[in-house]
Length: 360
Image (cartoon, rainbow, N blue to C red):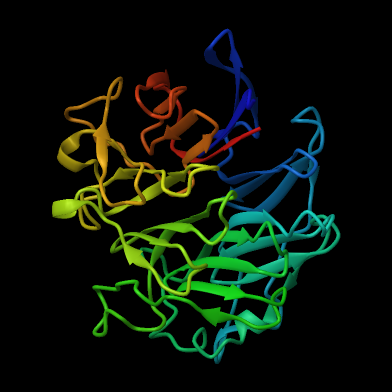
């Protein structure tokens, strides 16, 4: 049972504990600092936090004792690497972390902006840029890898196949989904079936904009994706993608995604109005659920504000564990459901922007 919820906000890391069926804030770490990501390495239950200092740049911290003590880790760098010919690369933001497999102790993947993937084999003390991806022909083409709301592309989703740690997927805005079958030596774009409506060729091999990507642990060939241009699902490990957006375009656009750990047909999304209007559809926070692989979606908002609401849920601010789901918004509101999203409780309306959540 998950009894702690980590909320990375623009003003610190908030730790909530579940006590007597209610969630309460117990600790705050990195007070006043912008937390860009949180990650719980379930192999050893270590907590990782990314800090985007306005003056000192990106920092990494980890705790092996659930926050009682924190240690600073190494920072990835782009020394002597070029984003484009004549344009030196520099670290803009650390977006996400993922362990490299149960059989690879101390090994971690890190996704960054401007589109660099890093690997550590010493539990974050040092990082190496994965040159095979950095030098991929598509990345060197600014018409295939480009910024989407950012100046640079960025890697926000990393998935390690639980059956084979050599098999890794990454989601890149804007480039699409790439996979490796040999631990990062070679990379292949797997975007067949995705739609990039903003490109001259919507079916281009590279240039897509996944917002969030998750793999079903019970059936690792099933991957869900909340994309800029809809909700997509693959049942063959990314060989092809199916558009499973809702009828009449609802749900379709959004950032947040949660999926069931056991049932590959169950997923939840929180729709936004559009790219131009990043607000809830009809100014009402709605969580949409499917139990049939996206053939149909059921909206629900019991316990949520249903009028004049301007909250946007960011891509890493929606999580699920067992029957419990939680999401936070850019306006500092935090909601939790303990019954698979059938109803929701307001946990806080006084936080700053919730950038990311993780259960522990």
